[in-house]
Image (cartoon, rainbow, N blue to C red; front, side):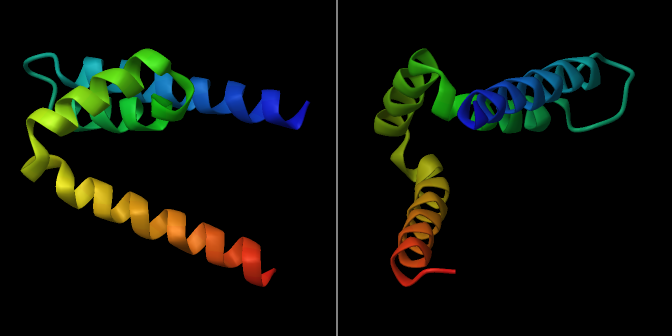
Length: 88
């Protein structure tokens, strides 16, 4: 039940960010619209197989753009594994 709640929360947050980003992308409304849409997509990435495939294709095509993102994800993954191994 907790996993379902986490998935629903992730979907709700991601969709809210995407909609907010699209609204901010309208000309005349100030704000970083496309950046917020991208953040929403990254929040949704673990839940969507289609998005993961598109992300992998873009990562192969533009490795220099995605290198900083991948290095941060790898660091966070190592830290999570270290915390799990060492305990709280």
